[in-house]
Image (cartoon, rainbow, N blue to C red):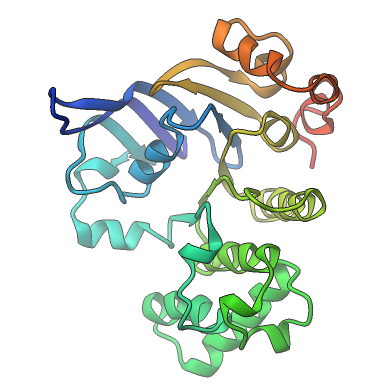
Length: 275
């Protein structure tokens, strides 16, 4: 098992006592498997992902376990976590404009982690950054490698974020709302890239989204969260076509009629995970 989250709770201090934002959640992700986490804003999706990569705020109080191939991330030192981030777990953050450094070019940001962890020279790291930009389908990568975030479109910035997450060849990729604020065409391109990476590189994927169509298209299993709790979990096709939790049924019922019909036609679920 690549990742096992067991009885995870996350709380923050509040005026009336601790406030739980994640409440006794358990879920597993196998090697090469894609897990979708879905729920409305405030359901605890992003907090779960930040805990998995050891990036919770210092005020957070946690209990339970997050086991990466048997080793508990919650008890690791900061030094040990630095070896996990990037190398074992890569993360694509929700908003690429704020996740990227505006004072560094795309190539510099991709190469930074490569040089730090692999101890290679500037020219070799730049060549690897160029290869990664081509891998995530950046148009004219030889020119874009020296572009700054403000010179790129939202889709191009998200591709740079994916390249950074891939730079150290992680085993697990976490994508937190990777299609937010992108138009439909660019959304499809980003999801196609993620599908290819999981298939070609054998990555495990955690895909976080409020969009049930995105989850249906790109994941093997789905975890539905509401108010910090896991209300339903299972194969994506089963969860979205035959939901048992009232909250899951309400999420599906809230979709426009065409979107609800589309859930029954998603090729990923219908083909059992074929990409």
